[in-house]
Length: 549
Image (tube, rainbow, N blue to C red; front, side, top):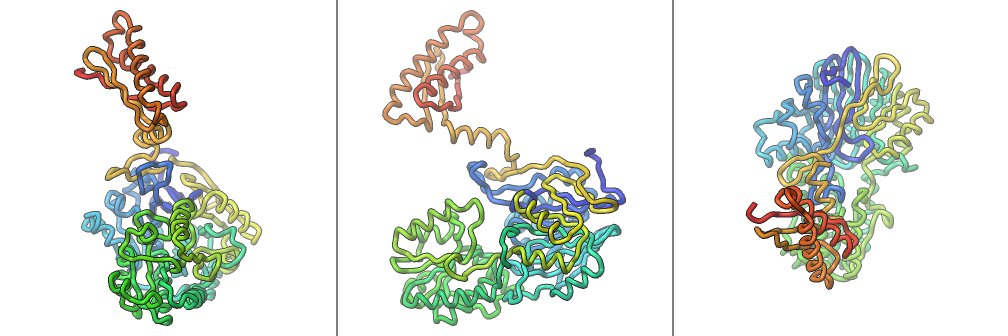
């Protein structure tokens, strides 16, 4: 792919993030020399990036073509779709488009980052709102999801129509919002859909995801079971429909509602400012909650994914003003996000150790997914009848399976693509035509760096093998210190031997080498590392410092 590549008389799709992985969604559409971005998300750090929390798609491709970028269209307000906005939107220099709820959350993020005045946020005021961006005519189409104002995008171009689902499901009783109806979607299909770019997250689920209305009944019945017990419900803060449900359950069961978690406070505030949660009960403070009879309070808390600083983790460790005791109940009204199993297990084991009862969605109807199972996918295929299916929003296994499923349901062209693949949707036969370089960036402290840069590579090595420091004084006498070596009782003996080995190694340097800085450092480094390997079986990083040089 040439550096100066521009889409010509064609319609292209390119994912920079979110394909062959879950999270970090960044999608580009190219047409007649211009690009449009859909979503600008992030994901959270994992063990392969020690000491970091946020991971972003590398936007180098579109940053080099920023003059041809027309705008960033946001489908909804989950972090994997908007989380990177404060870090990159100002540099990209184009307007953001979002419905009111999403726009308010984005605006707050920009304010916290101190760049609110540098990024233009244009609000799409109503359902089926329209945007014209060069050759792209975009219509917002509300679909149910686990957050307020989830939207698909109908993208009309001179080369055909794309239906970009965003995150979605079918829900006849969504509690919040009014999704686009089957009749409306069939009408879109009747008009002709070139390509369906579709969420793959739940493709292995043989059943429909279920209704938020059914969760209301399940939570109501579950909370009623625990009369006289303090009940805590943990859920995703962004799930406004679930918050509405929990408010109703609290009122129905005669419990006062207490909220624990800053993200919950923020979400309730933004939701109410945008016309949601109008009948949400007033919440009580923590001190009041702890003074009520146990059966008269229901706590809603963050931390269902095992986040160590979240409210549930702190309550489990007994270092939070809200407390649970033996016999109290925690309802996990959320699903486990892949990768969080260990941290969730730690919290659940700690709660169980203290005699606290736990109920998950495997035991009771207290959660449904916000993503479509196979019956929902099949229904959308039938209604829209696309010529091309492009699976996104999934790991390789999810996307490959949706491609197979779409073929089995009669879609003529299914295209498996991953980050960096440029797909031509039209004209001509659809398929991949090129690949561009993509990658990951991480927020390391206050600095955004390459995910596989020197700092992270070194941190991995230190975590695995430890560190040995060798200090040589002006006379060449060494002092050795080991950090992170599994020696304990043998540590002093190791230090003595390592220091002697360094002395011997330096004594073997003759002539110019004895006074050559690089030769001295390398001889000391190898001697100390060999000693560490001999004593510990590890191959640590070794840092040699020359005093006075």
